[in-house]
Amino acid sequence: MKTQELKNLSTKELKNLSQESADKLRTLRFEMAVKKLRDSSELRKLRKIIARVSTLLEQRSPETEKSLNN
Image (cartoon, rainbow, N blue to C red; front, side, top):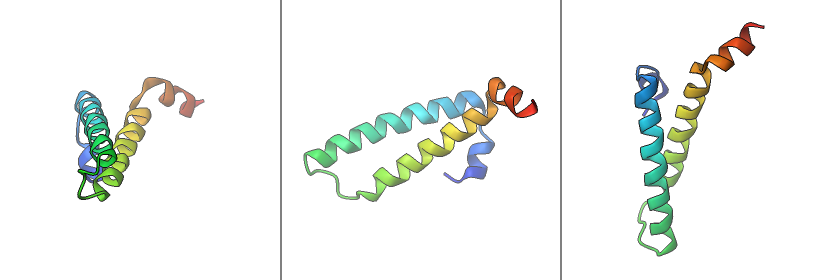
């Protein structure tokens, strides 16, 4: 997903996406360990999605807004 698409999602949807991506990443890592994974680029894509979502969630948190305003 692109960053612009992620910005249009609600906070709840972002949290769900983050959890789903983390679960899928865990599954892919296990597949890689037992040599079942065919496309290793999926790992990198998922890590990037998780990082983007985490950044957006951090930016939306009230504590971050308070610290930016001071």
